Each structure stands twice: as C-alpha cells, then as structure tokens.
Image (cartoon, rainbow, N blue to C red):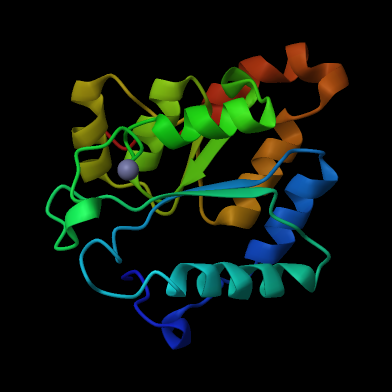
Length: 191
Ligand SMILES: [Zn+2]
C-alpha cells in the first residue's frame, strides 16, 4: 500500500475512526505524527495535505471521534523542492515531531504510546521513550531490522482497533502499577 498522491486515492481504513474514539474516551490526546515527503518529492501540491486532513477528520466524525493535533515532517534528503531538501530531525525515526508535540500539548512521552505500521515509528517511539505498538503482521525481517538496534515494540496489534484495545487494557489509571508488568507478553516474537 503506497501513500496517496490525490484526494481520490485517500482512504480511511475500517475501524480507524472507532479506534480514535476509543482513545478519546480514555482521555488520551490523539496526535498524528507523519512523514509526508510527497510535496518535497514533487508528487503533490502543498494544498493536498490539508485536504487529507479534512477527509480524515470528516471520517472520524461519524463515531464522534476527534484528532487533537497533527505534526508533519515535510522534508526529504533527496527532495526536488529545494527548500524541503534537508536532513532534519523531525523525519521519523527522528524524534523532532514527537518532542514538539510533547512540548506543545504538555505530554509526558514516557506515558505516551507511539502506534504505527512502520519500523521507523517503533524506532522513533522507542527513542523518545514512549511505549510502542506495531500495527500489522510481524515478520522475521522486522526482527532482523530492529534487533541490532536494540529495539522491540511493546505490543504488536493486527490493526488500530486491536491497538486501541491493548491501550485500553493498559491505560487504567487506578490499576496502572498492576497492569504494567503484563505489557511485554503481547509481543509475539517470531525468531
Ligand atoms: Zn523534517
């Protein structure tokens, strides 16, 4: 699955709005942290990102969900657009956007979850001190990538709904000290 280059290609996966609503109901701020090099690479115009955001917000509204903030890294080291050609600290696995979000929304990264379908998400989340959830099917090649880096996701979830359920189980303020030790068990090691 590739990144969309047009509004018509943009799809919100089933269950995503409901999962966001579950985060909202837990009182967790929902923040999107995304590498979006499409403008830098000349794939689409800058006006398309707000349009993607509008489509996601519109889809989220049906179960009454909302996204609290969105942070993009627009840079790419090989950008064709000169002012976006940069080795930045905000492109994941850099943690610039996570640090900025934490500062702006006054969040403790150690009490935050980084959820993503890419190993760069897991790497960025780990480096920022978050607990991490890999969404998708865990494969041996993932282990081979992350092990030398001393990383592993806290959880692996099939999809965002499953990730939300894991966080729901984990995020119970009154029983947090008790529920924390069970965290590691959800990681399914393949090799
Ligand atoms: Zn950047």
